[in-house]
Length: 122
Image (cartoon, rainbow, N blue to C red; front, side, top):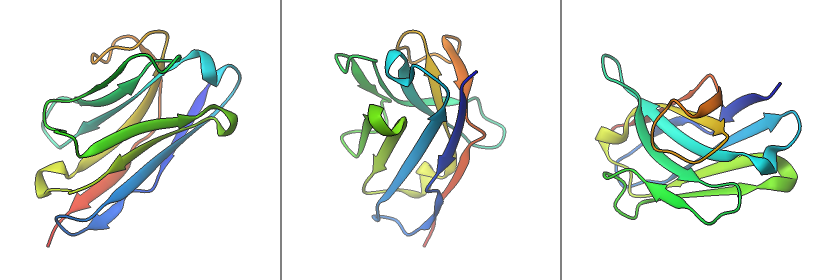
């Protein structure tokens, strides 16, 4: 059984940066695709970024526009989301997920973290 815990959320001003971390417990972290999603109240969860287990496939949501970077450290069982040039509309709860194959849809992801709040406000 894999458990995920996100960290690094907080309150930042527009234009600032933030790096989220997601650490997995359990075996075979390196065999999973990893992804980040986000959700605001009253809206569906939205795809942010993904990275395949072999690093061949990396994709970002349409709104990222070069501002975010997803990376992972297999030795630490951790996936990161570096977010730059943050905007108020980036305010959301951010979730990490692990799945058998990379997809911008939620369904293939078997394991989810509880989420971490990111607030961008002046």
